[in-house]
Structure formats: structure tokens, C-alpha cells
Amino acid sequence: MEPAERFLLDVLAYLQCAMGLLGSLVLGLADSVYGRYTSPGPDLRVPARAAWALQELPSLAVPLWVCARTAAERLHRAPNSILLAMFLVHYAQRSLIFPFLIRGGKPVPLPTFVLASMFCVYNGYLQSRYLSQHAVYADDWVTDPRFLVGFCLWLIGMLVNIHSDHILRNLRKPGETGYKIPRGGLFEYVTAANYFGEVVEWCGYGLASWSVQGWAFAFFTFCILLTRAQRHHQWYLEKFEDYPKFRKIIIPFLF
Image (cartoon, rainbow, N blue to C red; front, side, top):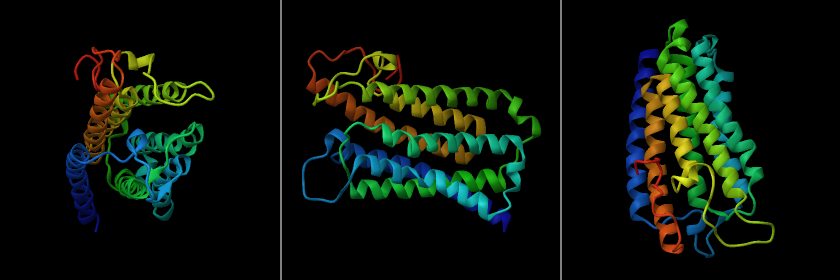
């Protein structure tokens, strides 16, 4: 059963890569249906705080369920437990802290909410099942340069993501409405500093895990967030005549 399941987890990882490419294509061709791009209408929507909390929660709950219902013997190894903890820490912040810091926030269309929730179930199972049951690392993997550099990138990326979200939340003073140009932090260099932080975070996780599953998640994240960042960048250029033209889309000094 173990070789068969390991093969299935590899297939799911490659499928995730395909999903990233397809999702990027669809987002690039179709009208966006989230945040500032949502149009008023009678369709069902989920309040912003509830949507973020509930759609991200499976990435926290599913791994805990997977580990609770199985022996999860691999988690007795430090590399496996640290890698899974990296994954869980991110989603604890995204599902239990971030939603309750949102100020206002536009409701999320129900289809978008459902798709995001389904992905979090999928990815939560893929990452946790692989790390708890199949990933084999040497005991000294935590001193390997790939793990150390990857962990540092993961931590830096998460901090950039959190700090950038803080800047976005505080663009408006109490009682103000409308949109403003983000200033400060990495927003001085790129339009989507929060997305840049998340891409760096999961690339660090992929490097530290050195697995098809970890890199597949990083690739999916990059594909989806790059497309969203391109849309944001174009929106800012069209809406604000004084938007800094030197800012890149998502990667400082590159694009």
C-alpha cells in the first residue's frame, strides 16, 4: 500500500502544478471576481472575515486530522515535524488571526470561496500526508544548506507577507473610503509586496522540503499570485496617474 500511496501523492503533486498553470490561464482570460474587482450583483457572497477564516481553515484542520487518525511515525523525526510546523504556522496565522484583522473587506463570491476551500483541503492533505507518512530525511537534514536556506526564506517571506498586509490594512484612516497607493516596505519596489512575501515563503518551504510536493505548492502559488499581481499592477497604473512607474509587478528589480 505504501508504494501505491506514495505514487498517488506524486501524481497529486504534478496535478497541482497543472492546476496552477490552468488557474493562471483562467484568471488571465476571465474577469476577476475578488476584492476590488467584484461587481455589485445578486449572486451569493460570503462576508470577508468569514470567507478568509473558513476557506483557509482546512489547511490547518486537515493536517491535524491526518496526523490524529494515523500513527504519523515520520513526525518523530525533526525534519518532518519542523516542515509540517512551518506549513501549520502559516495557516494558523491566515485562518485564526488574519481574518479578524480585516477592516471592512468586500464579500467573496460563493464560487470563489468554494474553490479556495477545496484547494486548501487538497493541499492540506497532500502536504501533511506526505510529511507524516512518506517523507524520508536524514537526521542531519536540518543542518543541510538546502534546509537552512529554505527555512530562512520561509521565515522572511512570512514576515514580509504579514508586514505588507499590515500596510494595506492601514492605508485608510477611520471613516475614509476608496483606494490609495501603498507606501512603505517592499511596496516601494513592487506592486504586490504581500504576494511576493508569500511566493518567497513557499519557495523556501519547497527548498527546505526538497520534495515534489513542496515544490508543486510553491509553483502553484507563483502561478496564481503572479497573475493576480499583474492584474493589480495594471489596475494601479490605470487608476492613479502618479503611480510610481519604476515599481515592478511582484519581484523586486526583475518583473
